[in-house]
Length: 421
Ligand code: UDP
Image (cartoon, rainbow, N blue to C red; front, side, top):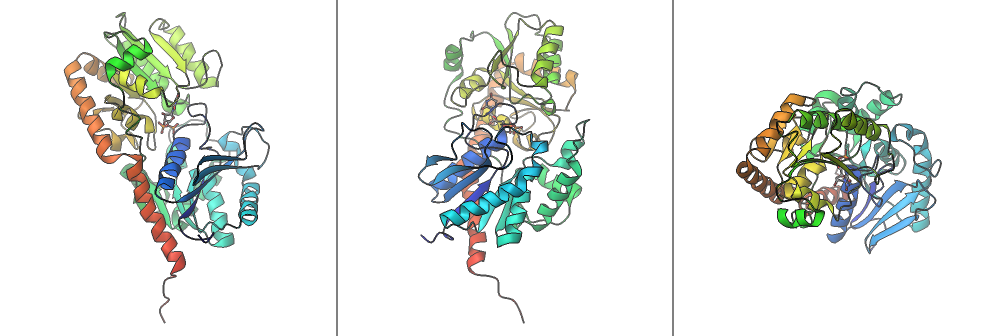
């Protein structure tokens, strides 16, 4: 195989290392997306190189996932964790290191798929330097995010400019929901070549356990009423809304009620202000007895948590896609989610779960009560949820759509369009 052609793709994810443990601060959906897409593409015959920034000297420079899929960690800036809002300054070095890697390995990436705005800047440079075709997935749009938070970071104007440039110049943009595409068109730029390809989930992994087995495995009583949150501790995730909603639920005070807030680091370790703040609210509201913080839930154990829960709640203020929704649904668990972003696409209101206005404690509380007091309806919602995911959101389906998209772009490299005249 010629090193510059035939089914070779670089997935660039500067701050979302596809090979690290998921669920900790700043490691979430993007890491899962890149890793799953990478592995699924390799099964379709692609040589997949996933580039990320090295953040610890303990990390290997190259992590081989299978014979055709690897994570390559480039050193740019300090070899330590840098919050994403401070990462822009290290990108020129990242580009330099990526070019060096290409040269040393006799590779040229004709197509690069960039993830999140930091990586999109890297893709823009590769396009300028060597004409690489660029596919981009935003994972989060600055303009939408900044509308939902109070402290706008210094890097905001830079981010908005880069997000506009990439929309207007990338060969293809991948929106993960119709809502995200609409935001791009109305809030960023009317130009742009946008395909909608959702995020997926591993339908064989999630959905592999039934409720009774899951509860037995986790030591949860059959008659417990379990409300579950899974995700990072980030103010945008709206965990406070969920905690207050459970406090207002008519089931509060029932000894069977259990709120599980999964994610973050292992118990006892603080992972940032938001975790401390949420634990503080739980304490202040006197909810310590019914609330558990199991910490980071590994992907292997997660299906048990989703399957054991009566309902999974996603109270985000803003959510570009929301992998947790499709994972819970694949496990046959109804989802109550904020009526925002990609959640409006994955969750079908009154059919696979309930959509409620973000930050509305009373509405979340009412939705939780409706599901907890009606087990038959809960089962029906869960069944619909799992059918929706099986039919529309598998990683294999996502990968085959990306496969066609990359193939088209590679084809255009080999057969440049004829210029008239
Ligand atoms: N996750 C996990 N363990 C945890 C918490 C989260 O594996 O303890 C995973 C979860 O299964 C999902 C991802 O992290 O795949 C979160 O993705 P999502 O799109 O919901 O949110 P993001 O982190 O991208 O904002």
